[in-house]
Length: 266
Picture 1 (cartoon, rainbow, N blue to C red):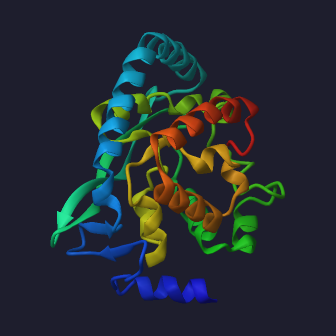
Picture 2 (picture 1 turned 180 degrees about the vertical axis):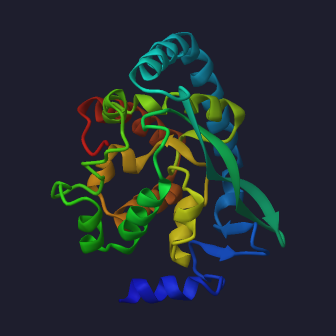
């Protein structure tokens, strides 16, 4: 009940005044998330960006042929483009009234297409709304075959045959290396949300996006879709509070085994 009240209060776009995060919206287009400790981490963010660029460039000779091969399989499996693009939101540092903050901005997000082109996003939007609200009954109505302990739709008819395999191994995410090279994302960080996802956030949920979006992160290596929304927010917020190059390297090292195991994927 308290969480539903928080979501109702969020419609008023009030500023959340807390020690670890705050939200200030100057207009309908801009969302500013403030974390007081950001200004002390310039060296970390510069080093993080350097690592992102080096890793992507080193991996490119291997990843590009793999993406080309997977793209061919996607094309042979179903009609439609090989690359799926979508608007997501990432954060960049800005200065507001002398304080370093994070401004959410839209960017074009790339994936290998894993769904049929005729699919309707309304189903996912409604399911995501139920997931954020923690409404188990609503999630069951959308997916009666959803297995216990998983928050992913397990009987999603929108997913192609090759798409299911790509999702289980997280190979559909490889094109996001281009997003990383462009600076839209980082190797490690919270996953970038959709516009209709942000619209359902309680004010405190904005804490999870007060930093660069990532290809992988604590959520991905800790169970992914076996975790509920509040657990995801907690993991992402904890990562942003503790982030360091060493922590990023540990998460990257855990990512491949997590992807290969397929635990929580979908």
